[in-house]
Length: 126
Length: 350
Image 1 (cartoon, helix red, strand yellow):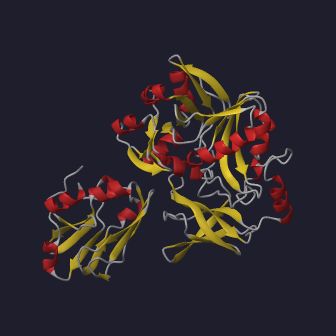
Image 2 (image 1 turned 135 degrees about the vertical axis):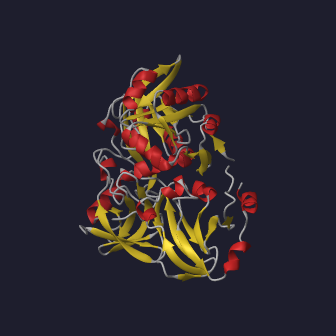
Image 3 (image 1 turned 90 degrees about the horizontal axis):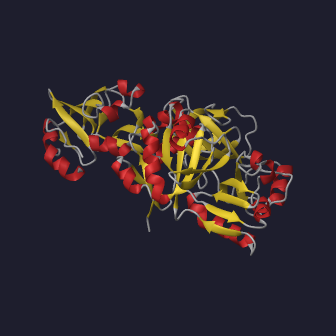
């Protein structure tokens, strides 16, 4: 049982988003990586793509199952963490740090504030 | 009703995470499937496989029953040895694949898959009539598997000896009888040990103290897949024959067994539907039910996962018609056909 860091916000689908100079860095939570088990494959989107909130932005395969990762907000993907392709285990070892998935330029700067705060996420994930 | 292993409390103390295996709540993993897989390939892993079926068959006629009810030829081995075999329908379909421990002339232990314990036990019971007697062993024993290159040394230190490959050796630990067989489901050296439930947690803990890494059934599945070992219910069922499963080596043609006529007819006519193995060139994971093509054949994946040893996705599945010598395959992963190399299992040489 872990406590979600309070420097970012969350979705009820177990993604996190951290606001960095107007952009959102996005990954999956510690709870999500625990539930998935060892991640062995990741498919990331192309930078430049525009995505709607809730759309699939990445696929993650573990030795147990396949999971989709959804965009917490609508926006344009500006960068992806290519290093994960050859080292997807970083999603397990450091989900809130080196295991980040992508940077998103949100269409609406206010959309971040609508996500769950850490306490609300802890309430649904612990 | 959910069944629990006699080791359940210990698994909880060890931080195991559980899953339902055919009605048994068993550890899927402790530290993680990849770590546990690596331990078995490079040192030693320890599995609780108490959910597997097991019963004894003993008394006059036991040998004859084993010979007739199972398709492998028991007379290719001798007392004190173990054999992989299958129970077939009259049509040659696989009711179950089993391990047989031949203890003494007219005394055997049969180890079916957990979900098939009742069905296999019933068929042996029917065949046994009044002379030989079957008795369930699962209700009062545990079954442990120690697997890996370091397993023989660990067994020597903890229980005083280790069985050779496919040897079955009666033994004793702390004054209680046990049976150790040089078998497993990983391709590695080691043993499967049946011991009284009351003493099993102590033995499990002693084997960990001696260096074996506790492993869940997640690692057991990636290990068996790398060896091309079949899983009944996925790769085998009553609609599939051992010939279709590329397991003619399990068929002892020189003795009479249930299903033999059907297999002879199929062998003469040629096998239309056949099991193939394949490997991706990338990490993508093929999964049960994905569509599969090979040469002119099409079908679906029955077992697939990531191979930790090879670092790519591997799998098996049935295609029809027979693809002959086709050297490539393709698997549909989420709407996209991915090229794969055809592999004749094992995927990993041991």
